[in-house]
Image 1 (cartoon, one colour):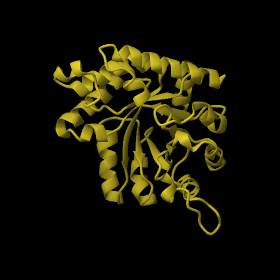
Image 2: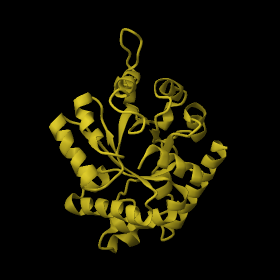
Image 3: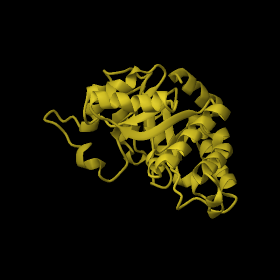
Length: 271
């Protein structure tokens, strides 16, 4: 999916919502556990209920890989279902890969050739040669970790060098030379508040993937105040606040309602 296609879909739907598919069998409604593939059964119901209100889905690979082959098959089936029934959705494999060049090339092949996802989250710590293998695929995206929402993000990401440049700024400024904003996005946690202003100073037209709205306490209004551009260029993710809003047989309908409410807030902020 190209940048212009993603922007057009956001404007058409008046939403920049990404639904995180962090499917935990300890949290799905109990009646699904008797299904042959309860992970996919849960995902399918969530996708069908939320697709009108979002523009992206983000399955987190950890929730699938922990179940071995069965989990990976559920992930592949989920991606295939989205691509077949909702081809306008942008699919993010949240895997946070990143290793030496030849290993990254294999990770890239597994994701972009093997599953057909649109994008992959990548850790930048090992530098350019660990990231560029992911950039060799046309219309596929690298979403680079920049400033995350977890408590430990301050351990490294906010440290400054002798010139006063913080590490997250250096990551963005340096990596911007590896690819254009047509292929590179950045992860910035919703809890970072006014720091979005500093992000936009070094990445004025890159898409930002923003987790942390909802259960993690991030403010949608604050994110939009500091980070929204004329073309929006935001994908704001909500996982637990949508997919686990209800644990009864009505879970999908409730998830759809939560997604609709959030998309309506987004539409108002876009206006």
